[in-house]
Each structure stands twice: as structure tokens, then as C-alpha cells.
Image 1 (cartoon, rainbow, N blue to C red):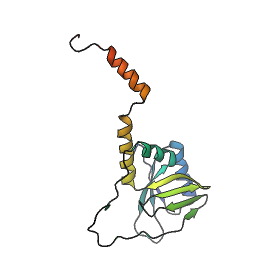
Image 2 (cartoon, rainbow, N blue to C red):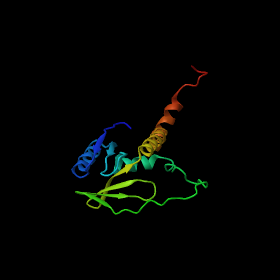
Image 3 (cartoon, one colour):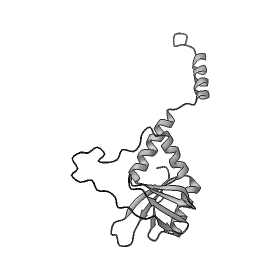
Image 4 (cartoon, rainbow, N blue to C red):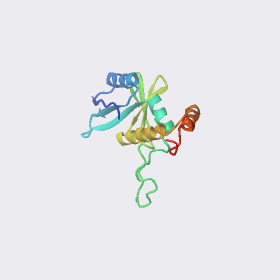
Length: 156
């Protein structure tokens, strides 16, 4: 991740709005640690602004591999518990049953997603690697023209 800001969120509400505002302002992911009431263990996630996630998913060549996908040795596949959307002030969190992502909506519009830190890192790296190897058609034509004007190794 290019910018990492650890924020502990014990009582979501204004804190979610503050962290989301920060992520939207810088256009970068923000690492969040949730300390939920009644749980001993912290939950870490990466809050990725919707536009940033769309860009990553556009450039990433494949979807993030889910652990255990195709693993036929698992005796019992547990279905995640269906949960109602959680509302925190102006935000509503929608946890997906598949993939573990949580969509963050404001006034009915998804503005960010909470991803597992490993998935966020993998997705960002894949997108960066593909994008760096891509030339748009005008850039490619200009580069080919430039190479055509270069003297061959024999002439140098």
C-alpha cells in the first residue's frame, strides 16, 4: 500500500465518517482496526475508496483467489451468517456473504469497500503490474515510430 494510516475504530459512527473522508480525500486505502464490543480479537481491514477499487479491478487480470476454493477435502463448508446491514450515522455497511468484503454506502451509493488486507495488497500489486506493461494505441504508435528512426546496431 502506498499510504497506510492505522485507525482504531471502537465505536463506528463519526469515526467511520472521518476515516472514509480521509480515504476519499487522498484517494488511497486506509488500514482500519475494528475493536468490536464483546470481542477479544481486533479485526483489520483496508478501506478502499470506490474509485480506487474500480481502477484496481479494471487493471487486475484475475479475481483474488479465495482460500479453499476447489478444496474438496473440506468436510463441512460453513455458510457465513446472514447479517442485517449495519447503520452508523450516514453510512450503512453491507457485508457480503461471499468473499468477505463489506460495502460502505452513503445515501444509497457505495463509496468504499472494506477488504481483507491481503486481498487489497494482492489486487493493488496485480493492477500496478498490468498497468505498467500497457501502452495505449497512440503511445505505442509513437514508440514504434521512435524505434524505426533509430540506427541499427550495425550502423552505430
